[in-house]
Length: 112
Length: 113
Image (cartoon, rainbow over all chains, first blue to last red; front, side, top):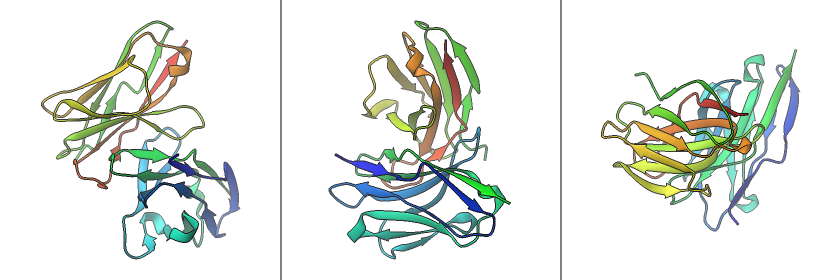
């Protein structure tokens, strides 16, 4: 079955530390992949997306993600976390159906 | 550009009632998708509208229906509300091109008592 898995429900990091949020997908063919961020009471904002080509994708707010076909992964990274990065992060996949399939999300807490 | 707008922001209904949620897409977008986000979960696709027709549908019962108007705005209707319908309902708009970014509205928080 098609699925997007985010293994970490909640991650806590110190401000200034590096961050990696995990995402694995299970699809017959490589889907388009996305990372969205959701702040409390807000809608979803796109951080970055992968369609094809270069496997390291740069996004907004200093985020990047690396696509690894062999591991069916699309992990999100940031070298130095800011307190304003505290939010819920969602990985999503899109196939030919043109709708998004989301993981369950990872809640990021940033401590001073 | 106002982006995607949704109304109302919050809504409280009782079981068995019917509700209508509204969405105006981002300027230049002709495709509207609706998602349900239960507490602590990721959004789940309900359906997508293009050219005033439902083009795709997720795994939701017929109690969930929608409409798209000639100006591309859309409504989501839910009949015979259940407690389990309590969720954040998100509207997203995009051009109808596979892989194009979907822009999300702030959502409507529906509480069913």
